[in-house]
Image (cartoon, rainbow, N blue to C red):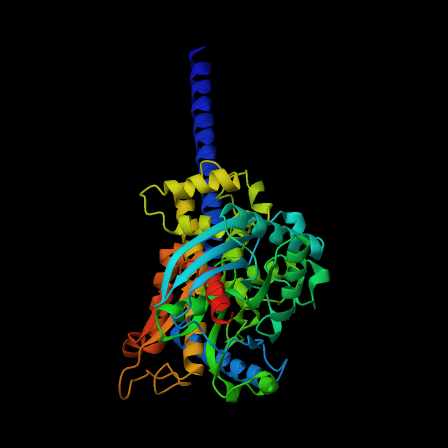
Length: 496
């Protein structure tokens, strides 16, 4: 019996050792597979970082390329990747305007109605702004329904404010590409930012609103039709005569600037004086050849209505940055299990908005608590490990940095076009200032720029890299609160 027991003990010991060895091998294998999956996720992020790199020399090539496109767009219609649209605004508010004026600011799925009371000496005595959401069905429905909704909102606003509509001048900010025939009329070229009221394309949008005003019993008429960049420029110039351009970096992105009439060759028949006119760049449609699209940009363009349309806007503006991040996270989830099993939330397009992306990037808590909250509440991913949350922050940083640096390059392209970027414009060498230092102001508006401090920091950093410290010190980016709407009211006053 004793010998048998000893044999069984030896067998058991060998068995236990084998089991322990097998368990150890299994654990090591699992650990190795986990590390392998982790590094596949890391590889996705590293690849994104390489593809989104924007060294200074590359940004300078973007500057030169866009400046050339701007020149070409002023010469012939359709001769450039940017439209360079004439706005017919050849006089900006000078501070002498007085009285009460109304404005409508339509630029996305919400719009604003405004009442502005002006006093002499660049004084806004009072202003009232009311925000209205547009039901989704109206962004894709009938033209009359959309403009009736806007006119009705204006009528109710005037009634609440105790104002009078009798003969009032109305400024209309319409932030979609328009081909102007006068300061108060222009036909819609195409919708952007997910609007698709197709029957409005080709129509005079000021006339569409005027007809809706009549249907709603309002005795007022659009006397200036502008986009949000022009409104922002008007407000900037109202306060500071050194303002030469305006930029929007929000849900979408665009710019305008003051140009000499003699170089706007394609529109000489519409220009009535030898002075200067505001030009709407429409740079959202630009596709910088120096910047390769990432797989996420390409996939994203496939998902939307037009493959390459608004390519620059899709790399810069708030409607799209969160969506690019979502696609990267989706790729990480496909390559690894870093987000766990519950990743269905990543399959919903546009679920990650720019404010969430900004909040993720700006979370400086040790445990990235805000990042975890956003992933849980908006993407339905619970208990995401801290190291994965750190990767999420890096992704948002990469996308933000590329967007801000490209926006900086576009701003410099405008400065280069009008000769405010230094004496060595059009070269990659460091610019130097000769003669008296001239101050240049760019009015700027948009939630992405105003509400996202990291974005602003990256943009300022890139401006200094491209221009050099001496020239960058002469350029001031001045935020204009409610600029697009208040500016429209100012222009209504200037042209009334």
